[in-house]
Every structure is written in C-alpha cells, then in structure tokens.
Length: 510
Image (cartoon, rainbow, N blue to C red; front, side, top):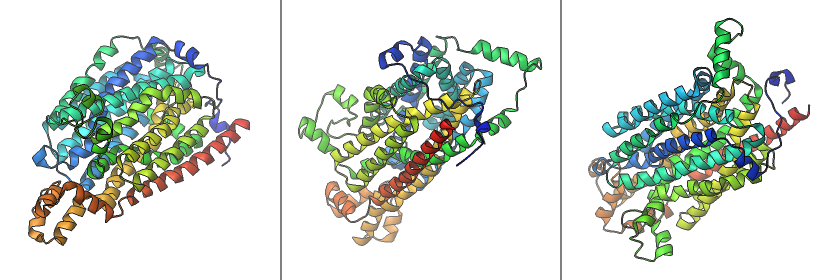
C-alpha cells in the first residue's frame, strides 16, 4: 500500500497529545452539552423503535405485530440501512454549507413523519416507508450534530469529547428500549406515538445556542458569491475526498465490523425471544416469584408480571454499560493509537458472537453482551475522532458523513443477509412447522397457520410445554452456525484493521 503523500496534503494525520481526563471535561463548552442533549433525545426515540423492530415484524397480526417473515423484515432493514448510512455522505457537505441548525431542524420534522407513518399504517409498506423517512431524517441529523461537536471542541480534548458524547448517546440508547418495552405491552402503535413526541423536544434545544463557526461559514458563502473563492459542485467535492485512499481503505476494512455490530441489534433480540429463558435471571435476582416492584420492572426491562427479562431489556445491558463507563474506556484508550484501540474492540466483539453461538444459557448471554459492549466502547467513539481529526478545514461534517460509509456497507449487507442467516439456521417458526409435519399435522393445516403463530400452534397441538419444546428444537438444530458465520466476517475485518493501522503508521513516518 504506497501512495503519493500529495493525496493527503489537506488532511492532518497527526495524533495530538490529549489533555488529562478532568482537564478535558472542564474544557468542554456549553454547546457541546446542548448537542449531547439533542443526540440523547434523538436516540431515545430512535432506539425505541430500532430495538424492537424485529420483534414487531415477526409478531403475529393477532398480537398487533406485522406478521411478516424474517426475509421480508430483512428487506426493510436493508433499505433502511442503505438510506440512513449513505445519505450523510452528501448531506454532510450540505450541512457545512447550509448550516448545522437548519439541517437539524429539517431532520426532526422528517423523523416525526416517519414515526407517525409507522403508527398509522401497520403493514409491510407502512413500516417500510416509515423506516425510509426515519432513515432519511437520521441521515440529515447526524452530520449537523457531529459537525457542531467538532467545532465546539479542540484537537487536545477530542478523545474525551467523543467518549463522553458516545456515553451521552447511550443514555438515550438505554432509555429508548425501556420506553418500547412498556409501551408495546399496551399496544404497538403506542411505541411510535411516544417516539414522535419525544423527538419533538429537540425544537426546544435548537433555541438554546448559537451555531459555532456560523460567521466563518457565511463569510465563505459571501466570498464564493463575489467570486473571491471557488467552490466545487457538492457531489464533485464529496467524490474528490472519497477517492482518497485513506477514505477508501477505511471504508473497506471497517465494513465487516459493522456487519457484526448491527447483527446484535437486528437479530439478537429475536434470538433471545425464541431461545433464551430469561426468567432464570429474574429468579437468580429476586427468587421464583420475580418482582412486583414497578421501578425495577422498568429499569431492568422486565415484563409486566416481573418474571422475565424482555429481549430489549437484555440488550439494554449494552447501552447501560456504555452509559456508565464509556468515559473510563475513552481515558484508557486515549493512551493508544486510534487504530490499535479499534482493533482490540473488534476482536472482543468477535469473541462475544462466538459465545452467543455456543450456548443459549441466559447468564452466558449477559456475559456475551458485556464483552461486545467493551469492544464497542473501544472502537465506536474512535471512528468519529479519527475522521474528525483527518478532515480538511471546512469539510468536518462531510468527513463525519463518510464515517457512515463502512457502516452503510456492513449494515446494508447485514440487514438483508443477517435475518436470512437466522431464518436458515435458527428460525423457531420454521423448525416448529417442520416438527408439526413430523408429528402428523396435515400440510393443509400447516399452510393455514398465520405467520408468527407456528410455535404456539405446536404447543397446543402436541400438548407439551413451551419450555420442553424449545429445548427439543434447540438441541436438534445447529442454531449457533448463524452466529459463527457472522463472527467469521468480523474476523476478516479485524485483519483489515490491523493492516490499515500499519499502513497509517508508515504514512505518518514518511
């Protein structure tokens, strides 16, 4: 990998010495904290839907769900992923030119429309078009928010700034699924109405600060109008930056990690709902009767009877850990090169997926999610810090939009193939239909079973308990294979990150 140094003339590849933890925190401006608040609100609403999307999709119509197959769900997620992650590649440049506050305002209106579409049209196409609106709004929101953050921080405190920002984001990521858990037990449309109301709070935040760097942006605009400064056509400008090998290689090596990452959120809740007996956790903590304490039921993501952890509640360990400890991991990883920290995070995440495939024991699932969370804390905040650091002046939001490219490739592929992999190797619905045929149910009766109701039909047809049938199906199928394949994809990415880090080090020394 050798390229002319001229390709990086505008990019600052230096890694600036960071302030200490407390000095970094003290140096952050009030605008940084307002931006964090807006991201928090947006994430509460977003993860309220995202964490339970797969469960909503596969839930039968009789229970208020979409009642669609996992393959159809994969189509929705793939389109959602493609839209959400590729839009920022161009909206980042628009944010740099039009203004960050203006694009944040527009994105909030679009996202509210998306949530309302999901609530009012409970069908495949209703959810698909709602997801497209949500994806478009998020794609416009991200560069504006992150561009504001970059302008409100300095190179000497970026590591801590991104670490804290990511921690604040995960407070939203923690609260959103909890809202969904309890809203969906009332009815599914309540989830979407609640999320639309929550994100509208960002209109208030927009009134609370003055956009940093606005004068410089307006002055640049004036000079361009007066012919004193040349500005390329936006898509040409973005394409010029995208062609730089440092961006191309970044995009390719991290795509595998994002396949891994998004599988946790798109597929693992379904896996937990179908194969993991989470009542074991509640019994360990509170005894066989569970808990009737409403506060504990909310914060632990339990069902309304207080006897089991809902899938979103299990996954919420991820956001909970990041919410409470991300700044500590940020302080530790500030001592290492960015690519070294990201490689370590990728390896830990891979091991977590191997563990998910190896067992369906509830406490082992907790350990796997914890391992993944540490890996995520090592890699995810660093991607923004890295791109913010190397971006040329005046193109910060554009480069932060480029951060979404590897996620776009990885998530789009995972969105389509992840649910398919799960359906192929681990679908309880399909296994139940097969067992019904083996136990003597006619094909006509099997064909008449509504989507999502195969297992409940199996329980009533055989007269056996749900627990014993789940154990039988799990032991007679190679369910872990789906997770091993995903881990293998992550391993390829880890090798790529290692080689990318070596190449960057060579560039910095040349």
